[in-house]
Image 1 (cartoon, one colour):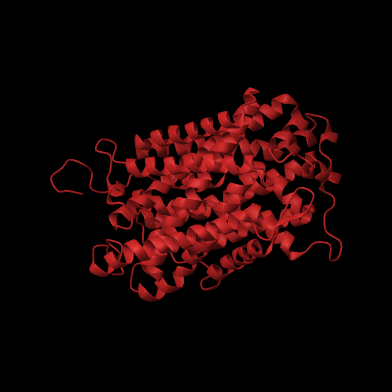
Image 2: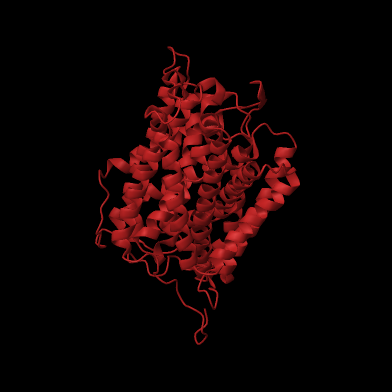
Length: 492
């Protein structure tokens, strides 16, 4: 930025604990808790296993949050994992995270979430839009929320708090559905404990691959808890508020997920969930059966609100990565420019929105060509593939920072260190390996591809990102045109 102009020179710390917690909760609770129960039952139709997977996802996320809170409070800078990976492993890994987050994780998340919003809106309005209409409306949702966040961080943060409160309340009401009927306010037979059968698989009837495939859907539902990192530079008193927001947020999310899924399965038999159409939403069908059309309308509205919160949180957090990379000359320098009036990284927000819109259109084309996964599952698998690799590396960077930044002040230290960071990475490594080994099948169970196409596409984008780095950035790094470390790193 040039000296002497009137533009803001840095991001202001305007977000408090409430907004920080809302970012954690709001960007995590999106579509997964409403949608992924169907995908999970395709791999493991045993409620005992399903319940353990949902609890396990919360425990896993909690382990990650314990370590992540120390790293983020140590380096509370815009950019999140980009900063951590670049400082821990070198500039190549920082760039690859930024590349993967922009090209794969963030943009595909926006596309998937906006698509679910549009589907729920069409259900609520009983408006059967054709595919082209849904694609255009999805893009309109992405661009509209991007405009809100360009107008100001406080506006985007305030919207995030409001939507998060509403979505937590609506999900709580869904989770309390069994109590409504058990208390005698409706027919008690609506809630049937026999729906939780089969509870456990017979000996050798469920392989490890099926469990890892089911956990892939769980990971999408918990995806987003690390979105506090990219906005860390704008959080007041980050050494206190960031750990509190992470730990409290993950606890609330886990409780809501487990209780909501118990409610779904008490209302709907396992086979009914397994035989839903891929485009159906378990929450909508469960509330339709419990409360009729009013329940279905409430579920569709709750999903819309939840997805808007996740969308807004991702649009709030994601462009801060491009902003940080622009500062380091690892992305076009224009990305670091802030809006002269609103003080937000407007060009970075617009760039992310445009790429997410392109992915929406490309994903619709792939789904239209007849690939067996729905557009939603295709995009979410794409997201998880990229995030598992780099989020695991970010959490494990705590070991390096304990050595290289030993003298830096640490108001918060990871509970359970050195075990919790390793425990966080075990399951993602198994799921990632299974994504490479598992074969893509059609609805009849026939093998149609030796590998999942979205995984191969993810590998292709990673290789392409490495090529961009070595061709365009490595030489500039050697000459000092690209800074070797993030500005202001207390460890340098």
